[in-house]
Picture 1: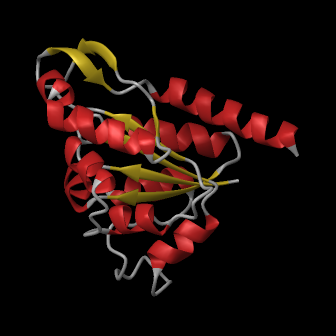
Picture 2: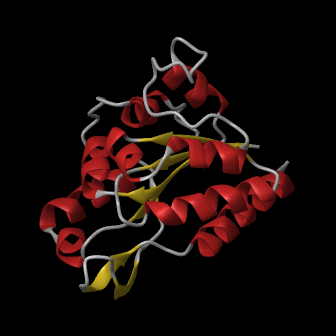
Length: 184
């Protein structure tokens, strides 16, 4: 089963490495798509080493052998999982803004493809009315939010906005896969 793991630029993007590894160990094919800002925080090559597949940032880069990677990935994806999902990425999805590979891919998904987000940001950002409205918009569009936890964040603040741990997210994905298999 193929998963597209979207990674946006949050201090929590280091957790996405563990998540990519766990999902690969669970026999998922994991294609990682990083936002350009995320690629400044963590090297795409690290994800390639963890998944055995090239991690993509730019649709037209040499790593992408497909001229329209956003369409090809969208067609193959059984699930789009964005972890971490920043306020900027959430806003792009909520308002159909397609200005990078990840946001373009999200628009190109088939209607029946599940879309999950795991927000990760400062508590003030997470609780901002605009971010909360964007999350409600995504929920109305069928996105599943993996509710962040409250706790200490990289910025030193404490409160809601801490991305779920990779093991928790991987367990949810495995349970989803198993439920899909039992429905067939």
